Length: 313
Image (cartoon, rainbow, N blue to C red):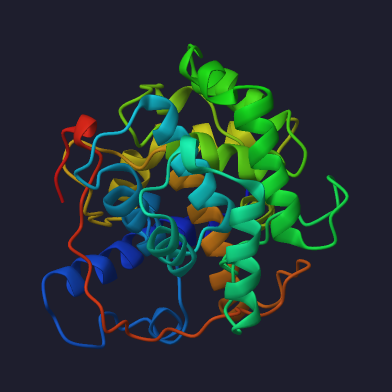
């Protein structure tokens, strides 16, 4: 692999400085959290995917909310939440339906509620990433096709039981990927979120998939992959992270007992691609602007990690 050395080094700088921003906020420091003007102005995801606001909501409200659920219900709850990927939509459905479980799912009832929610001017979906929106099940509205997908997954093909029998992340990914409206990116996100729960225990760093944003970032960091795949690059970065931070005299603040995982390495390439749209606009891709400016959230997060990780901030 032939590196574009200055941009390759920028990957490690960006990861370190973004993590510093996280800890500065966590420790109660006041703005600016960094001297980097691009990081000051624009919104970037955390280095560890699990620390982002939506993932934290998933952990606290969907998976580990203090109530007892069957393993099948946990998978159902995770997939349903992630299809829309929006906290307010989940809260709305819970307020209307009570506890969200397999035995209270109804296409007609969910459709009625989401239509009502949408007609009041609310967004059903998070716009952080765009889920597939074709009419795979013949409905005109996106959410109706997704509800039909849920119905097919859980009630026609008992996908939840198949996932529970999987031996590894790749096998579970392939099951998820086999359904309409679920592409490589979404399947990888879903299997990662399911693996946050304790109903499965897949080894994380045996499988990865590079999403579109990660591919853009990789192309900017490397002049030529020389036959290596995007996934090979992610594995290379994972294996060499501690060496690279030391080489560049960067003191990255790891979560205790936890290196950056494949999913985090992959996401960091996506975030670096965004950063470089401002820092190095000459490195062109099909995206030229960063969509979101940074706005301080008024609500604070009491951070949690999956208990099975035995890790601490």
